[in-house]
Length: 337
Image (tube, rainbow, N blue to C red):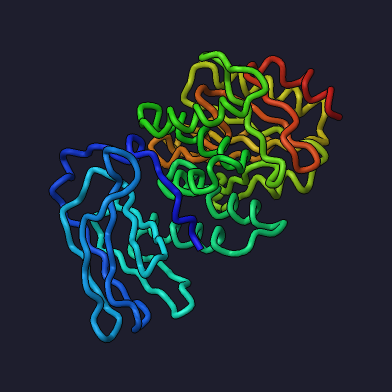
């Protein structure tokens, strides 16, 4: 059961989107027959929530709420004292189905499905697998509203999740007011106050590292985990192959590979031209996958990357080093073999 006292900071939720403000938002639902009304609540400028609408549920347990989009990206439903949070950032029609026991599923958009998955994990009794399941459910969506919702619901106490979401928001939503709140929450957990220019280093003690699965030159899906599991040490490289520095970067990677052929290398190449990437990586003897610059930047958010190239060493399923200068790759690899 959700904590009824959960108050989500209004200033973080009220994000204006003038061009979409007049678009409609519709939620239809099927509830247990004994439910009589559904109350829709919006974040209040004074903090907390206020009632925006109340609809009756018919004898079959069905209801429909249609309204103009508000300035928030999350609504709250009060269903006989049970609070259900739903995304408001989609103009698609969403649906809610609730069982007699109070379990529910939200559908209609990717964000809605995420809300369902996260709520199911958090509503269940916590055990030793809860954190890992939560991180895996969000691993491609740490910059989503659902990830932000999960972080607030846990009040930032899941430090791994907080770091991942704060990092993702910093990279993909630097001007979002929620980013400032997440970084503030994260800074309060630091042993010492961080300076404005300090890079936040990711920690993922339960997950170890965030898996990546992208297409290689043959058009095959290739995962980072496959490389990690088959090598004693793996170099994860994020490189802009359209940059003038790319040949020199790959030369430094190659020197490490020649000196220590037992290592695995998983290079994520960024760019707008996939053909140029394929040509640039054609002769490289390690794993190369392509990530379009215009596609999702979730992997950059997960690894808190703001500049390319950036490198990580993964050993025994854990991130053991972060490297910003490709000239330091060979010596750093030597330390961990």
